[in-house]
Length: 333
Image 1: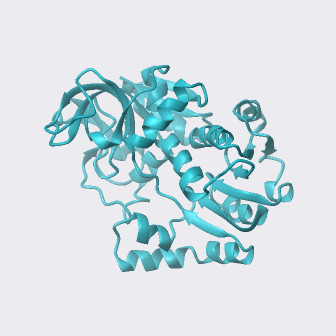
Image 2: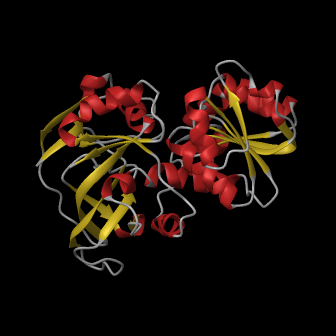
């Protein structure tokens, strides 16, 4: 089969289309015929080698983190799915494999697709949806009446995080460009700051939590708008030692290096009396079931910026890396 393969770490040429063997499901696995796959900034960060200290991959391997498709075959012991089921998944971080006609995934990471979505829209939901859900529910423990700040609200994670926060009863502030303001307001954002002309730290105060999706100075500024004792959860900053200890299988040297690398961030958070946590999303079929239910109930909608044919996946990555997409970029088989 023809797949998009990560052969080495580096620039865009490190991934290319080539022939690979069709995968075979093992015990507890399902073989999925991929109908569409979502592209994410994580994919090119992995390609560039930014994650190699934290997630060592056995290269070369088929790239790709999320997909929608149809169950083609089930391995021994599979009980949750049958051949022909329409499903979606965020694949195992060490196996990857979504950018191919077929992929093998552990059944615990798979869920049935929302019945109201087509394959393209469903393919862009798993990674961003799980990230948003787990940040709000598990890390910030958002409850009704909270005020939550989300940087970069018009992106893939941001569009879902806004809606999930509103579903949890929170009031949301976010940043967006003028061309993204209408979108984020339609999703439920109450306050929108134009990041091109304003600094949100000059306008916002006493928020109960923040999700940092943009990193850099936005991460540092988020500490200034929080109530004392509140927390910023980031997926765009530098992983901290707590993340290394709780979420990653890394040794003490890497943990110590992350501790040193986050010194400035931790110092700024401490100066403002707030907490900081870098979050790695955990693939979960159960959480995908929840997201699918919310979509089918009309409480969560996907935002797809553009769909490319799989044969144009290189062009799709070029488009994604420009950083202008509103919602998700998807390739369709």
